[in-house]
Image 1 (cartoon, rainbow, N blue to C red):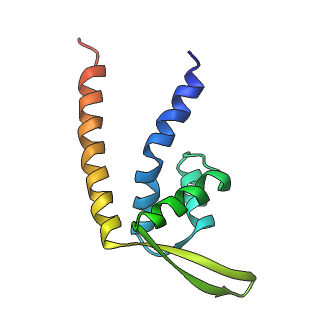
Image 2 (image 1 turned 135 degrees about the vertical axis):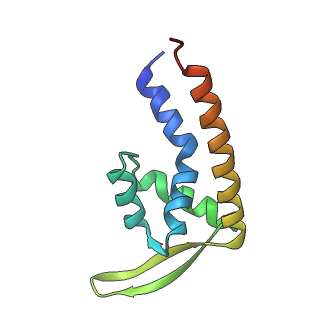
Length: 110
């Protein structure tokens, strides 16, 4: 088994949690989300992000609004819906439980 593939799968599994957590801080443009993910070493490309944002929007977890840009075409800014906030809270709770369980299992004795 390839460790790099396992790492990629783990990152994919928590990407929604990370994206929703970033958007919760305030309305954001997709490139801002990508920058924050990259700065945290959660590497993601536009080809991964945009379909995920669309899926989250279609599930009523995100809203978006268009805003004119002085440096190009209008930009789409994303924000959490109330349903998105509830979903994020559920994901955080699940993540904390999972993290505690994994830490307990993987701790070395002595």
